[in-house]
Length: 175
Image (cartoon, rainbow, N blue to C red; front, top):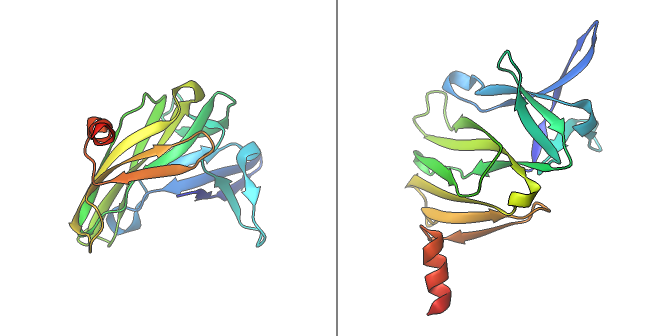
């Protein structure tokens, strides 16, 4: 996911931007993310979005709301992998992160066709690159069931399919 679709709510106090993440039971969202107006961009059709990775940090307010604010010392990404047909997916972050907010995307209204698990994470720039392990099951139609993805500061990703642990990578280079 490289873009978050943004909606806006107009009130007498001003305009507030938000993104709804996740799609669970019958389309219910996992959480609402309030977004700073400084992060909102427009495409050629006038649709508003936030580009990921974003130079921003996720914070939680005292009332429990999630807010995405600009930050020079943090990057925000979405981690996870799509599940197989009638399966699921999991992830495990291998790099220290500041904030992790998990969400799910169900492939059908009741989740019978698969449940993909993701997270919106904020990482301090000195802890980059971000590394996470993913695993998926169900009908994969030839795709690999496990792997490790490495996300660089500029947002480029490299994925090593079929590897369970980082030690497996190191041993592969030694041979």
